[in-house]
Length: 188
Length: 138
Image (cartoon, rainbow over all chains, first blue to last red; front, side, top):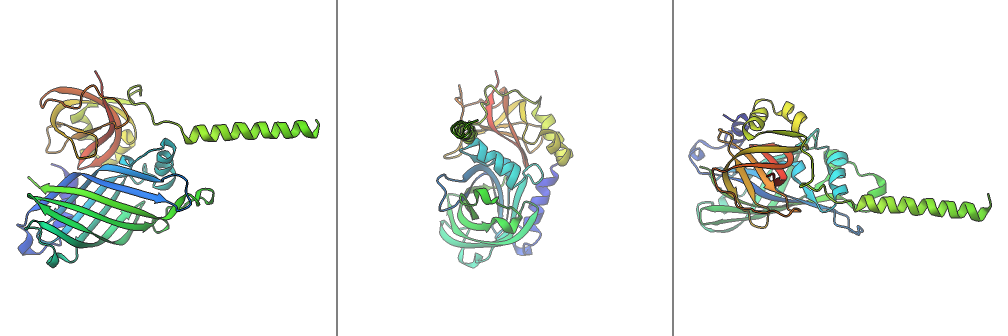
């Protein structure tokens, strides 16, 4: 039995309507998340990618939960990766980022019918020990029994108590862009 | 010491400093084929550690180079990403080893049921125990 699994599923399902309890659930362990904090004046890209974000979606209620391990973010430069983990997100102390939220315009998104829909997701994101409200716009594509989510949003690093030393402030943007690309399959 | 010599000394030190800075900035990622494992254990034991006490397991394994052995349960090849090999733990959840995108691999297909050993970095617990930058150990 896996306690974390039940925590995650319960978080998604507890707020679901009774009518939605039998709705299909979708899952991925292979979600791609790109983190881009490149300042406009930076000569180098300050970006990283992970291919291992987990997402659970309740197709009935539109509730979703995301979880990503920060050590899974890979940078092109080893030194950037070290600084990201040790100085900025402190991944030994705060190993995960999480998001729990809901598709707020579910009436316009038919997860039971093939097609591409514009979706708005709102919820709470936890990073570096700080929880903040986040809203993201994206596209949800339903095809062949799978649900693909492409979305993006920005977050102010200072909101999450991530401070940027003045010596590198010309390279690192105050606002990081997060891009999501994940294909969810029905949970067995 | 004359002014010219002091100037040359300062310039020399600055050059050394810049060289060290450039070398650090461009230092390569760890070569996983040559990396020494901090810990060697079975996939089931690694998963059990995390499933029992995640904080204690993080303290022991997070960010460490781990050599993990286990039976192949599944191999997936996500689009545009390195292959992932799922090792059986006897539970519904597993140890997932993502192959290293910077290393050359002698194979990326692993028959289900084969016993394998991978060496990789422990990223933590996200339903499964996740290891990245994995290379096969033979």
